[in-house]
Image (tube, rainbow, N blue to C red; front, top):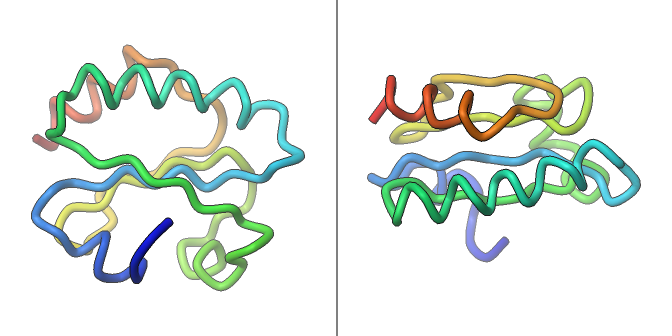
Length: 99
């Protein structure tokens, strides 16, 4: 991730944050789903990944208890969060309700 986390989530483009860990098998399942959804959204949303082991303060701030956890931010505000593998169709529904 390049840049300051607070600046990134405060941008005008909604940001989906994937809180993950390298050792996490469900995170490896979630990753291609996020890539698919990001392509389908065609630039209307930005997806970033936060390694909870390397960024524990950010994970703690958003009360990430398990990985993967997805969090959607609009102009710096957390508007949706869910732990566990989330299928593409569910993510698209979430985005449709916020975009």
